[in-house]
Image (cartoon, rainbow, N blue to C red; front, side):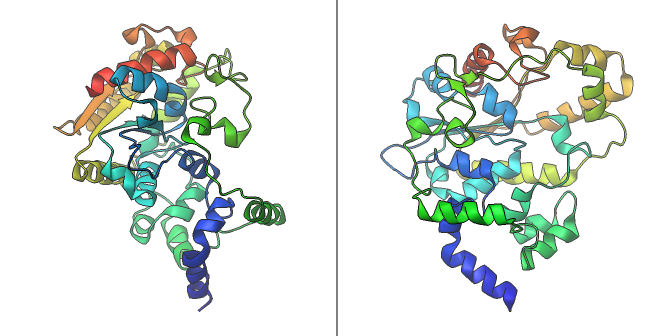
Length: 330
């Protein structure tokens, strides 16, 4: 009975609570501020994915390369995002499916293996029952949470106070799309990241000189190694949704540091696993799905120095890569 009452309350007041950050993951809410419900200004080109797409895809550069109006391209990537988060956004904003023509999604080996962390709270908040039953991990816990949201709606006193302030200070007003991403990719209007509008990148982001390619490559491809089939099923669902909408999906891997691939070239098992991942992604190629794998930065005229760490792009690199993805889509 209590569970039923709680869910009735969510159905009646869920939007207001969502706008107060009481329900929603901060990342989901941040990108939703850019989504327009305006048939006169359709958003036709959508970038989904993880923080790598947040850094790598500049909507302005993408729109310019495609020859379209600036508002028609939007970056909806979220930190640690995947095909599932893209499906959530399309489910919450179905009007996007009436306008989208091309969508981009970044992919990486660790999104589909045991190397990934446990389920984020946003999964508990937004997953439907079928997705919980098919969860890549913590299946029982996430399914039980559907009936009584003991994880999804766990809040501290501080969270409650923030929610109250959000409900009473007009926090739910959506800013104009042109202001929503003041830094192009970082969502600074919500996160408070200090940004420079001139070079369109986080001023605090600096190249990681201490990056260890061997450790990172081992993380994404070494034992314990287990492919998460549920993650591929989530990708299948996104492909099906966009195909039904008549949209093209571009699966892409942004460039990573060259020393990562140098390490892979000398480690047969990890190279085989990485190759198997690429083959599986490339198998999605069809009339409605394009696949673009960029490994070393030099392939598209960049250098390792243009990357901030193993694979997040600096501003100049993002402009180059955005235009490259536009050409791939066309």
